Amino acid sequence: MMKWTQQKPIACIDDTALSFELYLPEGLIGMNELKRFRGIIEKDMPFIELRSLEESHLGFWAMDPFPFVDQYSIEISDDDVDALGIKDGIDGFFLTLATMNKSNITLNLMAPILINRKTQQGKQVVLENYKNYSARHVIYEGAIQCLS
Image 1 (cartoon, one colour):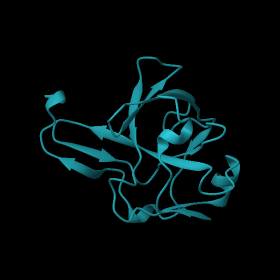
Image 2 (cartoon, one colour):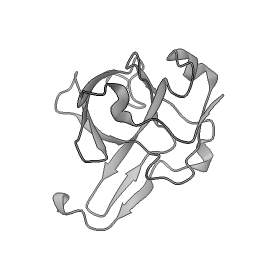
Image 3 (cartoon, helix red, strand yellow):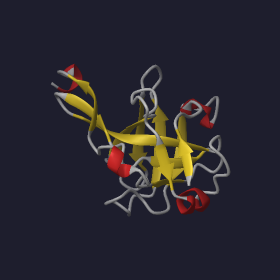
C-alpha cells in the first residue's frame, strides 16, 4: 500500500502546459465509457476542468485536494499503484472531483483520480481508508455568485 499526505504541484505535469490529455482506461466510476479527457488548468484558480473527448458537452471540475483538506491521507492499494506504473509518490498525483451548486463546493475524497505524471494515464480509485472520508466533503459554504 502506498500513502500520500501531500503532493508536488499539479502544474508540474508539464511546466509549460496549461492543458494536458488524460487517459482513464477504466473510465470514471459509474461512467466507464468516458476514458479520454482534456485537463484544462485554470490560471490563478484552484480548479482543473476535465472535458470529455468522447462527449464534448460533458465535463467535470477537479481539484488538488491537499491545499483544501487538512490531514487528508490517501491510502491506495498496491494493485492500483502498480496498474499505473507508479514507482514512488513523485510519479503520481491526485485530483478529486468537485461539485458546485448555489450554496457550496464539495469534493469526493473517497474516490480520487490517481494519475501517473509521466504517462498521463489515471484511474479513479476507492481509497483503502475510504471510511475516514466523505464523497461530499464541503470545502466552501455560502452563495456562489457565478451560479446564481
